[in-house]
Amino acid sequence: MIPMTSSGPKAFAELGLSEPVLRALADCGYTEPTPIQLAAIPLVSAKRDVLATAQTGTGKTAAFMLPVIDDIAGRPKYPGDTPLALVLAPTRELALQIDENVRAYGKYVRTRTAVLLGGVNSGPQIDKLKRGVDVVIATPGRLIDLVKQGAVTLADVEFLILDEADRMLDLGFVHDVRWIADRVPRPRQTLCFSATVSPAVRSLASTMQVDAQVVSVAPPAAVADHLDQQVMFVQRAHKLDLLIDLLNENKDGRTLVFTATKVAAITVARQLDLRGLKVGAIHANKTQGQRQAALEAFVKGKVDVLVATDIVARGIDVDDITHVINYELPELAENYVHRIGRTARAGRGGIAIALCGIEDVPQLRGIERLLKEELPVRDDHRWHSEEVMACLAASERAARQRAKAGRMRGSRSKWAR
Ligand code: AMP
View 1: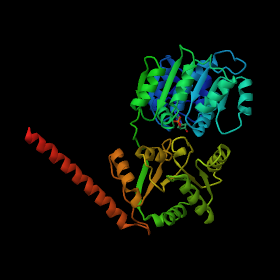
View 2: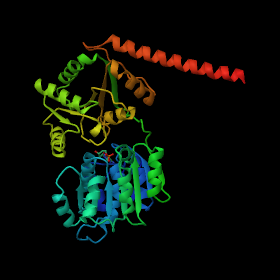
View 3: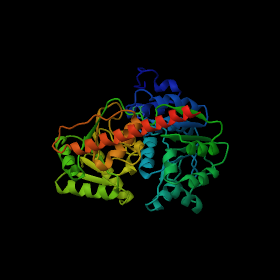
View 4: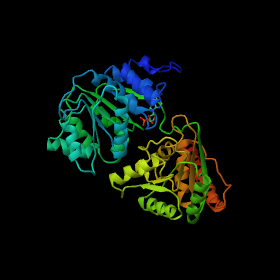
């Protein structure tokens, strides 16, 4: 008897997944499919190519992997370096997370995985491949190296999965992805997941897929309902003091702090450490081992605060993050949505606080435009700056005037016609 509830609109059992996979999902505590799983699983099971708009945090990994795990489970276990499924991920963090999920979902069918990542010694990865592998999860660069060395063969791959395709393009992996896709034989099933489907993503997908079904479950700027967003106006010189006050107020919480640059991440982490806070840091200067260690310390509660740059804004998936503090606002408004999506996960509540100085005003306006709402202002702190607030008001006024002037020019030209 599978302890799977039939509550909710549809249970996993109704999606045609096999009993061992359902049992693994029950172990994970999943009671019903998420919207992306409901939409994508039947299509993937029906062997369709799928182009899906879904962010990390929506349950997309299970959406693409469950039917694949199920399919592979029925096959003989081939020895050696010939995977049946290949998942490409843009970052190491995401690749490791996918691997963890695949192993959890496939634990009763003994899905064999190998993760191929750059920045670490390839020896253990090659050994793992030699022992036999069903699913390879890889970042593009390392995979290409290992294909060229003959350590992995793509000739038997039947499922090609591209995760976070938009990020893959942002990071300049387009040629690598094409190179890899050209070496995966057809016919095959190609699944492409992306937080946003831009024309560039669509164009890349169209070269890899055949008659893809398009699935979209959440608009790119969707923010969880139970996420409490706040903005605090503060002079740059007082940001650290305000951050420390906030962390002291939330001693029982688990807080992720985002900075715009690695230099800022290093400085903030050091300052917090000097003040006796238990803090870790993840940024581009850290090695893969250091990043993993920092993440694990955060997951296990050995550190209460993790300071990070946007390299983890999408990949990180830690339960119970109570607060996301944007120490500096991101250049790209969409990254704000990714950052705050690290809290209020899986139905829990969460608080996202934006610390806005004068230098962050343009970014705040971009974020509010994207979200189509103004973030609630919290001024009940000793570092509140009326000057920053006035700067925002002036910037909004200027924008309104520009828009009005544009409308007038438009109406004059109409008169002229
Ligand atoms: P993903 O979008 O794949 O990164 O998944 C985000 C988080 O949701 C992960 O922690 C998953 O373990 C979790 N998750 C995925 N599917 C479900 C589900 N059906 N019910 C509850 N949690 C889920």
